[in-house]
Image 1 (cartoon, rainbow, N blue to C red):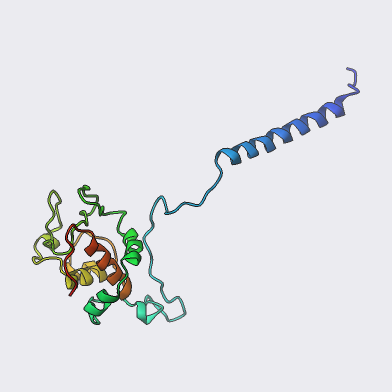
Image 2: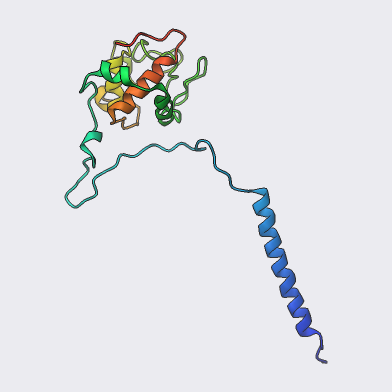
Length: 190
């Protein structure tokens, strides 16, 4: 067997070609799949409440102002008057994983929210509600929406809605005013 005088040159060339292939593939994949910032998440995530993790803090909210409310704890009319529907449009993103909100849109996991203010509780065409809501009675007025959005399971024990609720009073008011606007003829504020 004779020793190849160009063995080291061939080996260096092979290593160099392999490096070019790796760098070229990385550059090509970056050009094809260039990351970009999305306007809104592809898969909306549910917000989790901030919990006091200090020793002895337990499972109580870290800030007393964010404590889950039963709804209507303060003057709801004043909160609704000061509410911002544009901020409510951001809050409603928490709902869009399960609810549609466009006129004529079908139901998702939950019922369509179009024209919800004034609609009967547990009443939406072609949607089967849990017994807790179907038997509740009444209609979705501002007080009922505030209480339900604060703690759905407290408002209607046995509801299938798994959402924990919106503990922030102003966020709830913003959302309610936004939902009020989802109508051909919005109901007057209290």
